[in-house]
Length: 473
Ligand code: ADP
Ligand code: MG
Ligand code: ZN
Image (cartoon, rainbow, N blue to C red; front, side, top):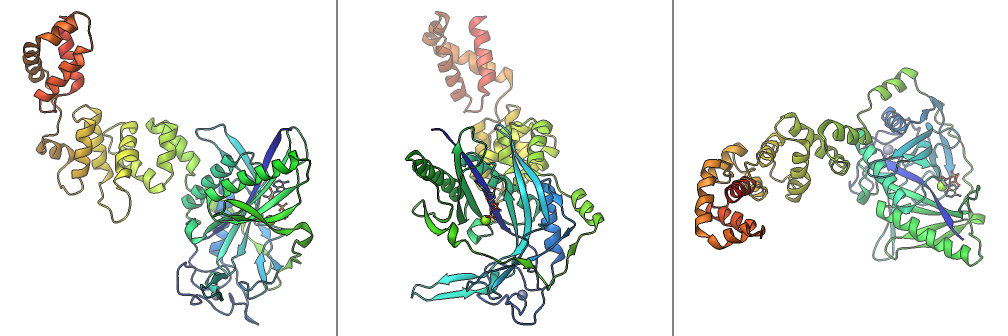
């Protein structure tokens, strides 16, 4: 039997607000253990949480970006469970009324567009972190307690592992574009749970699902979905049933392992957080947050294609990093070259020389555009352009001046090239005779001789034209 895969994701992103969600502690990764804590985030008796306005605003912006309804009146709830990384023994989260609900994200670009429904986005606090020391002891660092999180929950609308990857990449781009989260995977600032089920193709109801918990990378999520789909397919094909369970994804072994079954599912005993009142967002603030949203990555990709004539692929590559797209647009503002030519130089050679990374030699976008104009106009060969690019950062000269000084400019002067061509035709009578006898391949040889005679600076296209005219004429 043929099965269809359905995946729903729960994506947790740490917000990069200055302070934590319910206290004034600094929200920062990498500080010495237990130095960013206070009675509130440690859950000491009598300490009272105060909800951060910045957290609300950032979460609402993400909600707008994903076309959600913003629930101007919402609530926080206590989710009780015991674990040593949670000193209060409950997490403040949102259960019944999330801040944002019913949105969607459209995945488009070089592919068939698909719309992934967003069920909800809610705000919550992160827990601390257990550190397993080599001597077998387990230590706990509470710095992460109270770090603000948003959880983005999708409908089970993803039907292939690659779609899981596209979705997560797009979400990460949007979070970064909004400046809501850094999404540094290595710091665990974006993690996700992957819910996977199979159903016979054409069946209306979804199959029973397994949930793979706490996956830290996009590639891990893609592999987890693929692995789990294969595991379930095998069980179903052998007449078995899928146990509804929570599984752990082991990224090193590249497989999922049982964690807890449905019977053991935790009962969190949610109830409204009594220390925080109902959250009420003014309508005006919600509207302002919508109106001040920046251009989203998908819109920017589309605009780069139409405004500058770059390919969909180049637009995606440029937009993959806001700094890169900004660099491109600044270069284009100089009005010197086509978008295609500048994108080529940025995505090929500039990235290869790590030209946009901090601490590396910087080439101003206008100067790269001037270089691109030289290659586009045939004044500089591609190879000479690479030589020029390498010399640009340490030179105060304009690309044109530097190319002249380095003797890199192509010879386009027809008169000069014609005299070279005449000499080459005299010196090589055999290929000339070959060409006239119909062996057109001999032309390439003659162009090569002319190039050599010009010291590599002759424009091959111009030489080819001159030679053809002389030979055919
Ligand atoms: P829970 O409260 O048990 O975590 P939810 O209904 O809130 O379950 O769903 C959590 C996630 O699981 C959502 O992303 C949802 O799309 C996904 N999901 C629910 N049912 C299925 C299913 N049968 N197959 C795949 N994903 C599912
Ligand atoms: Mg869940
Ligand atoms: Zn604190």
